[in-house]
Amino acid sequence: MALENLFKVVTTRFNGNTEKNEKKSAEDSSKIPDDLLFKCPRCRNVVFEDEIKAVNMVCPNCGYHGRLSASERIAITVDKDSFHEIDGNMQSKNPIDFPGYDEKQQSLREKTGLKDAIITGEATIRGIPVVIGVMDSRYMMASMGSVVGEKITRAFELATEKKKPIILFAASGGARMQEGIISLMQMAKTSGAAARHSQAGQLYITVLTDPTTGGVTASFASLGDIIIAEPKVLIGFAGRRVIEDTIKQRLPDDFQLAEFLLEKGFVDMIVERKKMRSVLSHIMKLHGYEKEES
Image (cartoon, rainbow, N blue to C red; front, side, top):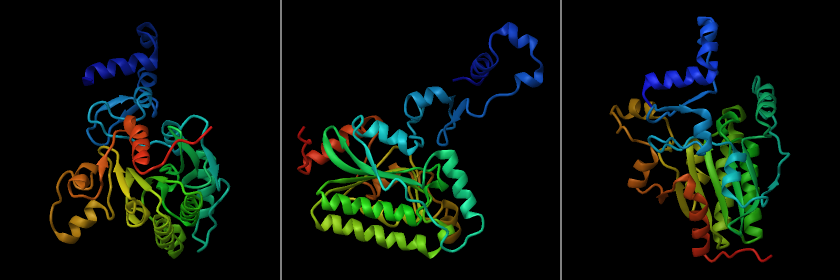
C-alpha cells in the first residue's frame, strides 16, 4: 500500500468523514491509536491490525508468521471444543527471591489471563487424540521457568501413559533468569521426559514459532521426532550480535530464519499456518495414530 494512500485511509478510519476532520484540531487529528496498524518485522510492510488478525497474523506481503497467543493458537489448531487443559492452576514461586519478580508475575497474570507462559492439555486434531502444549510470548517472552518445565514434563508423562502423540508449539526467549539455576534445570528435566516418551515408541512433534531461542532451543524444542517451523520465524540459541562479536564475522542476512535452518538440516519442514492442521494430522496418521472412536 502506497504511503500516501495509507495515510488517507488511516485518517479516514480514525477521524471519520472529511467534514468532521475539518472541524478537529491538528492536535486531535494526529492521535492514532497504538493498535491500529501492524508493521511486519521482516519486510516492514504496514497493514491494519484488524486485517492481519483476520488472516491469523500472517503478513500478506512477505508471508512472515506473526505471534499468536496460546488460546488463539489452540483455537486454529485443534478440533472445536475438544481441548481440555491440564495443570492450569500451576504458578511460579520466587525460588531465589529475585527483586520484583512476584509483582511482575502478578501484573502479567492480570494482563494476559495466564498463570504462566504455557498452556498444556489434551485435544483432538481431525479426530486424532493428542497431548498439546503451546507457549505464549506475552508472558515474560515465554521464558522457561519451573512451572513451564514442570507442565511440559507432565504433558510428556501423560502422553507416555496414554500412548498418545505430543505436539509442542515453542516460542521462547530461553531460560528465565529470575529463577536462576532452577530454570536451567528444566532443560534436563524436559529432555528426560521427551526421551522416555520416545523410548515408549510414541511420536513427538515440535513446531517452532517466532521466536524460539536460548535454553528452549537447546532442549526440548530440538528433540522432536519431526521438527516443523513456520515461515520467516526466528530460531536460534545466542543472539546475532553476540555471535558476530564472538567470531568477528558478519553473518548471512537470513541467519537464524526458518528458511536458513531448513537448508542446514536443523528443521524438517516449513509449514504455513493455514496448512498446519492438515499437516499435523497427516503426520500422525502416517505414524499409525487413528481417529478417536465416538
